[in-house]
Image (tube, rainbow, N blue to C red; front, side):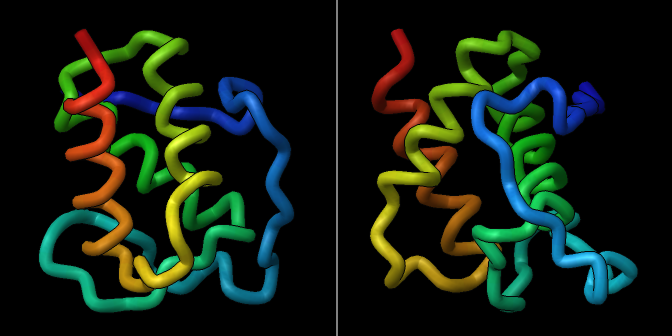
Length: 95
């Protein structure tokens, strides 16, 4: 589907880790790299991947994903763990 999420689409504002923005970001499973919840450059590709998996471009779904991310326990550390939690939780909450 190839969803593109821009910072202006998001419900919340996130800081940017400019020093690390050139480091490769989430592109799919497996990815054991730690996920930085406080970095817009990590959040955007994660949201795009989950939105693609959900086959949705609905802004309400994106905002739901942000709420899930902000509620998610911190023991979900890696990108693949965060992706799986976002995807499964969203599927449970969506009609």
